[in-house]
Amino acid sequence: AWCFSLIVLFSLDAAAREFTDVQGRKLEGELVSVSGPQAVIKRTADGQAFTVMASQFSADDQKFMQEFGAAQARYVFEVKLVKDKLGATKTKQNNVTYTSEEWAYKVALTNRSTLDAEDLRVDYWLFLKSDDGKIKAGPRVQQSGSTTVKSLKRSGIYQFQTKTLKLSRQELDGGFYFADGTKNKARDSVGGVAMRFFKGDKEVYAWATDPDLLKSASGRTGSESANEAAQ
Image (cartoon, rainbow, N blue to C red; front, side, top):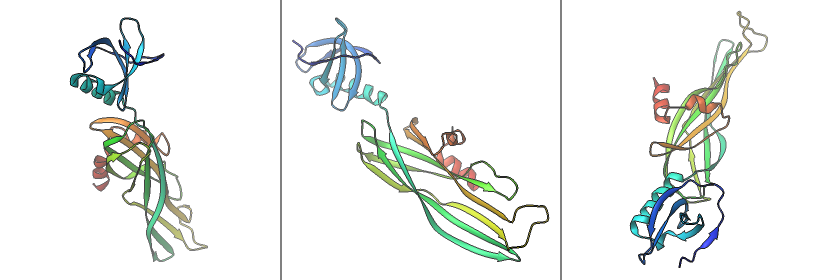
């Protein structure tokens, strides 16, 4: 007799199959979910669902369960950012002071998934906003890049630093104004970050400081955007 713990399921994402355990016994049912070493099978005969150990089944069944679990995997990451000012330079020409600043983000990714993360590629895009003294422009991509997460256990943390984001500012001395009416200050500011997580060619997670930023990163890898920015 099959002696597994009975559970109740309300929603099924099924894969029908005849399973064979290591003792040669057959169980016809639908594979519902896989979590670590355990699988849930809904028996065809009566609709009952059982939690089983994958290791109790044949090598072919174990492979099937593993592939099913990978296809159904859901990744979730907590993202924390810290802005880091790397340096600044100032020059002055006539009555205008020009400042150039270099910033980067220190990123901490915490794996909040129910599975370990293996061989993920994280593409990221760094945005800036510009105010030329007349018009405040919306965020645009200035820098981008990628990093690879080789192995990150559940609740583990992966840290990295992004590429450099360059900001510029110009300011007139007090009492001076531009002839065209432009304000006496113009500056760039940090405009946010967007990230896309890939397992092979499949996107498995996305995150941004503002969801609208993901639209600007859609369909482009971090390396492609970096090449565009360099041209």
